[in-house]
Length: 187
Image 1 (tube, helix red, strand yellow):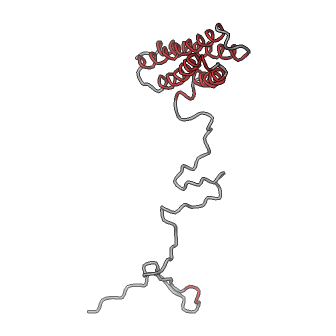
Image 2: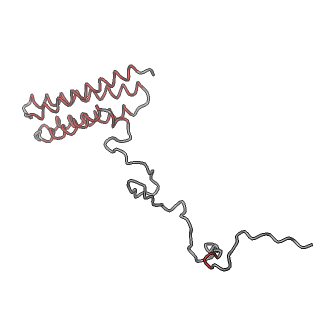
Image 3: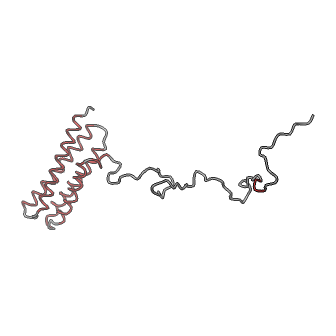
């Protein structure tokens, strides 16, 4: 008995040449026909509000870059400590050559204050956080003491001294607030 013939998968109208079946030519050697992009090719989306040069980047709205991904970048104490360090650098540059040890100590204390605040904010345990914030408060006090010493020796004058001492006092107060906040949290 003969096998019954199966119906064709597609019907072709022989009178209209535009409906001829298309053969898959991408399997042939040497042809580059592709009907859709692969996952490695970026696709253009006209509805996107901006063009990101990285095809693998997340297509959400751009982030606010004024504050970064680290916890310490959101702390007011850290931001003020950065201002204090910049001001300490300006003040230290005006200290005469024979007294560079005071300038170096001021810069080192201001830098340590910034770094300790960042380290404390990114620690997990309350005890570790508290210890770094206490040390940062002490470093802010050292910056203020270096300003007082330079003024007492007649090395510095002007409004920069008052501004630097005000920033050091503000950092110390903000660090004290962080210490109180960490002490209140249950561990």
